[in-house]
Image (cartoon, rainbow, N blue to C red):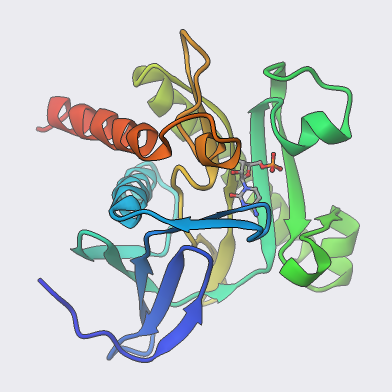
Length: 243
Ligand code: C5P
C-alpha cells in the first residue's frame, strides 16, 4: 500500500519525516543515503534504505513485545513506517558491551575489550557543536530530562541492550554498541528514531567481522552485503519463530 506523503518536516542524514493526515502521527521514510564522520563521507546505494527499514521495523516490534514503548505504529511499504509524533529529546544515548570506535580513541581501552557492566554514555545532539559528550548534571541543567526521566532513560537503555544482545547472540552476532534516541509522548518517555545497522556495531561471534556501518566508514568491504546478511538472519529468525 502506498501512502500519500504530506509536507516534508525534517530531512535527516538517512531518513525523511513527513506530516500525515493525523496530527499525532508522522511518516518516516528510510532513504538510500549513507553518511559517516558527521557527513564528511557520503554516498547513495540503491536499496540501502530498505535494509535499515526492515531492521528498524523488526526491532521496534520486537522491543514492544518485550515491554519497551516505541514510536513505531505500522509499516506502510518496504521503506516507510508510520510513527507516533514525539517531542524529541536532543540526546544520543550510546550503550556499549565492548570497546570500539570513539571510546578506544578517547580512553585506554583495547579494541574489542568486554565492558561488564555495559557502559552507557550520552552525547548532546547538535551537529554544529560536533555532538559533544554530556553528563547527567548538564542534562538536568539544560532541562532536557528530569532526574527521574534520566533514571528511566538509563534503565530503558539497559533493558533494550539486554533484549537486543540476547537476540543477536541467537543470530551468532555480538552487539558491540548502539545509539538510540528518545522523545516524549503525552509526558511519557518513548524510544524514537531508528535501530539499524547504521546505528549499531555488530560483529560475527567467530570471525569478529563487522556487519554494520563500520564496513562503509572504514572501507572494510561491501557494506550492502553486510546489511543484507543481517536482514537475512533476522528473516530466518522470524521464519523459525512463526507461531
Ligand atoms: O562513534 P562511536 O564509537 O561513539 O559510536 C558508538 C555507536 O553509536 C556506534 O554503533 C555508532 O554507529 C553509533 N552512533 C550513531 N550516531 C552517532 C554516533 C554514534 O549511530 N551520531
